[in-house]
Image (tube, rainbow, N blue to C red; front, top):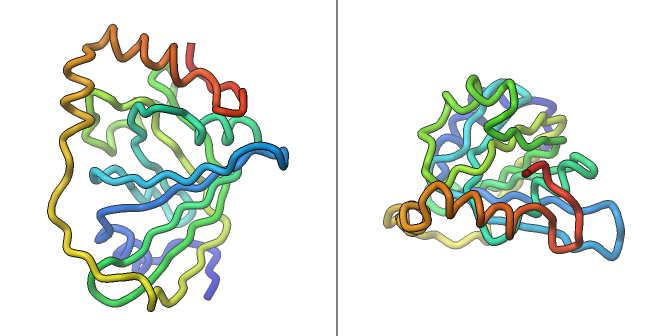
Length: 179
């Protein structure tokens, strides 16, 4: 079923999920589609058509590059426990970095991590629910602390260098907004 906004029932489902997936792609057919798993209590519903998630420094920055190029984003959540359900949020997004004017208001929704790189904000124009009958059941065992330990070891200067060296362009050469 398709919906044009996030209802209270949808929000309740979203808030229960421990993991979500983000998909973006460049415009050109030769570019690589990116699909990233996310977790760490980093997803927020900000309104009936607006969601955001806290994005941590990673080996690449494909999502930000794709959003800067064309804005398209799909976010998928699926139930790994309880009743089966898959939810896809279709929209357009943008990366908000710490120097942006709306960073203070957006970052207040999250418990920022040392490796927080940006906040991805998406305006949702379509939501789809589907059965999820073939999604296996899993038990949640907890969050990993690897990102925090990695960031603490690098320190602020090391994190800035890592972003400069690894997050300025996508694997296809598309720019991001850093440095």
